[in-house]
Length: 240
Length: 262
Image (cartoon, rainbow over all chains, first blue to last red; front, side):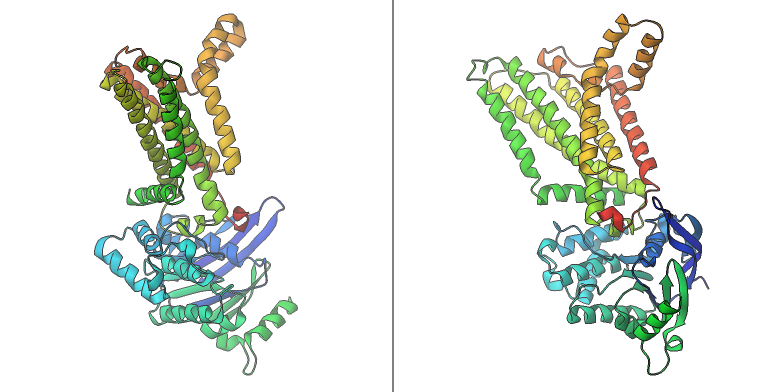
């Protein structure tokens, strides 16, 4: 079975400074998993995601999404992506943004309209759909960006710090959306510093440090009964 | 094509919603004021002056708009971080660049159409006449020159911030427009290697001056024959495509990281 994500010996070196952001990284994420990607700041989480999205060409190694090399734009057909600091065209209304995003996926007509209505409802911003995004709060901005990431009903959703800066209500909403995606068999690959969130929603996780995976497995196998992810994470990082 | 048109529509919507349209209105106001103020100097009835001033301003404003609109699009996407969700979609970077160029160019083409209509409305109101075919050709070639400028500015903006891309585009286009036409004069005074070097430079640099039909319009010399007209249009298309390809070569492997947003 073709995995949702496959990364083989991926190395990324940033010039100037010869910074090794990823160091021969290997990672396979089977379809249908909610996969947490955690690590300290500068571990390479965002860089790995950026390689998958084609923003950063690898120095060496390869990456595939549903068997398609990430160098090809077709690989992004089944991806939804929410960036770390989401921002979008603030001069548009929420509805216009989703309509524009849908057209980039060659969606049109009634099916696009139906999908926009569905996703607005799902992300809880239907009431603000006809308002300019410039008037949205931080949480609403996060939701509209998540809505545009989900417009194509992607099989793989990449979320970079999806709950960063959100209040508890916003976090709960994002958590519900991720849980909903899992129930529908979608693959979710997300990074977060909110370890309690990761523990709550993830089936599997990988801990990244200095561009390498230092621990990987099912959440229930990695964390001993009575412990929590934060403790496990700190012990793992200290042991390096 | 749908994706290119979608990206172009975003450029248009931004121009309209962010009130950039006001710039166009101010420029139109400046043009109109200049044309009407010719009356003060007793030139209001001399339609040749009206045409000359109006077309000069249309060229000047078109130049400013083409460079500004085209060179800010990509840096703005990158600094705001809106490039990330956009390029995460199944579009190639070439489609992205084509969309940006199409959006920028059509804005400028429509803007100068407004200027042309305004100039010739004033000419008619003062009892002047004009040959529609010559003006249509002049407008088409003006658009071709602006397409070249837009593509050049876009190419620079793939690796530079807005200020740098706009500055270098202004300087280079100024040189192309004002100095290239003088090179043959220098060649007549040069000898040997210098003359050959100047000749090579003359042939290599884009010749924006050949798109300028103002004198034909002002002095009613009549339209160009079909062959030279189509040849100049093809030259403009070729130059625009060349700059678009340079933009793509520069952009296709560009890395985007968090640093891009700084």
